[in-house]
Amino acid sequence: MKTQNQERHDAIVIGAGFGGMYALHRLRDGLGMDVVAIERGSDVGGTWYWNRYPGARCDAESIFYSYSFDPRLQADWRWSEKYATQPEILSYAGHVADRYGLRRDIRFDTEVTAAHFDEPANEWLVRTTSGDIRARFLITALGCLSASRIPSFDGIDDFTGQIHHTGRWPHEGVDFRGKRVAMIGTGSSGIQLLPAIAADCAHVTVFQRTPSYSVPARNRTLGPNEFTRIRAVYPHLRADARKSAGGQVTAPPIGSALSGDTDILGELDQRWAEGGASFLGAFTDTLVDERANKISADYVRERIKETVADPTTAELLCPKDYPIGTKRICVDTDYYATYNRDHVDLVDVSTTPIERITAEGPTVDGTVYPVDVIIFATGFDAMTGAFEAVDIRGRGGMTLRDAWAAGPRTYLGLAVHRFPNMFTITGPGSPSVLSNVIVSIEQHVEWIADYLTHLAELGITRTEADQDAQDSWVDEVNKVADATLYTKGRSWYLGANVPGKPRVFMPYAGGVGAYRQRCDDVAAKGYPGFTHGAVPDGRPATTNTAKDSPRPIAQSYRVTANNTRQRSSQ
Ligand code: NA7
Image 1 (tube, helix red, strand yellow):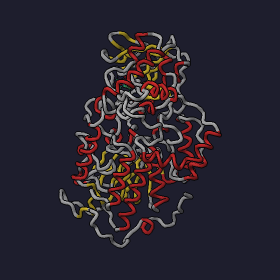
Image 2 (cartoon, helix red, strand yellow; image 1 turned 180 degrees about the vertical axis):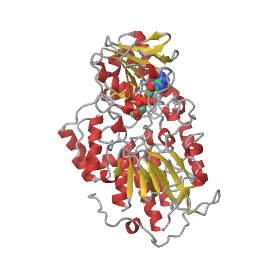
Image 3 (cartoon, protein in one colour; image 1 turned 90 degrees about the vertical axis):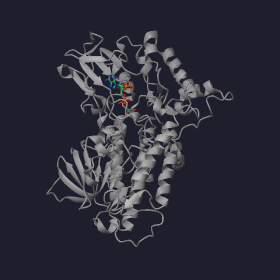
Image 4 (tube, protein in one colour; image 1 turned 120 degrees about the vertical axis):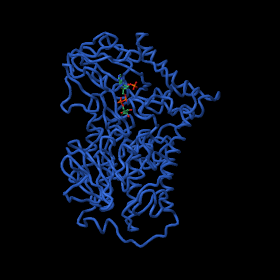
């Protein structure tokens, strides 16, 4: 890829969601680097910018699904509900952007189409829809669930009504009043959306391929007194969240579900009444033992049958052929009860798939369902789809698509062999989607910032993950996943929702606390697993080990970057 353009920065961040925003802030205002972020949306917020469908909410609690890096930011933002709505989270993202002056270094409405490592120049050349940019470091903050997908149905272009995907919802909203609606997909998005639109529609037909396990949110407002109490202990809550398995503080498991000593059903009753995904954390063995898992799964099936009046519909809504939690558990408000409304119908497409879409609507088993609007709540090409959409090439012209042809491979979910000076925020191989992702984002950005500081202090301008280190990390990710039931669900964690995608369990299932410890150990030992300097094909120039003797600071970003920049108020 040739370019005449000489625009240069120390680092390019792709994406201005929560990952990209914090990377920009930390590298620019913390390290004094010259950074530009590229964002295809017209504003910050990432997933919360795009997923504007009615009912969209975070399923991690708002007090944890927010940045913790600046106590003053934490102190001056007040969440109004236990689970924040999409508009509130988007406005929080805007508040963060204002507070740290982020927008001035974000190029909006701009897509990155290619990123090639220019070996002689030791720089990334990034091609965007508004020109080419060069930088020493490339930080991808692409989002794990940003490549939305509409399955390829025959005849879709013939449909004469409106088509919307939950992950690309129109900013002006959709008027459902009096409309006949088809909703395809019953994952988190569909489950949140259905109750929110049902009241307005003339009729809704839900097309379900796989039923989800969903637990009630029991959402509520956070009153001033409650918030004051949270603020008093916020630092402790945050510290605990960082060490936890999932990145938020929930009631600890009471023991094995198979132990005869504990009040198993009482515990599930209590967690069901409290609401939220901590239901899944009631016992130590729910995600590792099928018999233990069945206890929680049966419990949910019973609640579904209790709630849904029509027994045939209730039966169809009961997940049967996979363990609870192995596809992402959903958190809902009135989802199952919505099927008791006369104008809401469920069509099972598990054995008789949608054949085609005609001018009038979806066709299943020869029956056409005439509708005015089709909503695709059909999810994303998770974790790797956003990478595949960009022509990323590393050393020797190796494409990331080829490097990941059999499934993504990373070192610590942070770096990729043959892709020097590239770091991935919440990349495959990190806890990412199995965690409260903001906790993971902060940990990744801070680890990357520390590593860049380390490199600058040693005057090192090039680093690359070693093949061996990457191979053993991939083995560990697989080993951890294999010790759980996660591999038993046909989930997007495994790439199973995308035809032809390799079946590889992509996130690290060992928990954010254990993962943080691993990353901290690597830092403390002087970053073993990375090679510093140019790497001739297959032969490391210098392998970095703890034995490397520290060198005097030859170069630091504070010296080389634009020194006129003001540090932020953090
Ligand atoms: P999900 O969880 O991937 O759900 C997508 C749904 O769409 C799921 O029920 C799929 O069934 C269904 N789907 C996909 N393709 C088809 C076809 N061809 N026919 C019928 N049904 C289909 O995406 P969401 O947006 O709901 O949630 C993603 C994450 O975002 C969520 O976990 C939260 O973290 C936020 P399948 O299960 O594949 O049989």
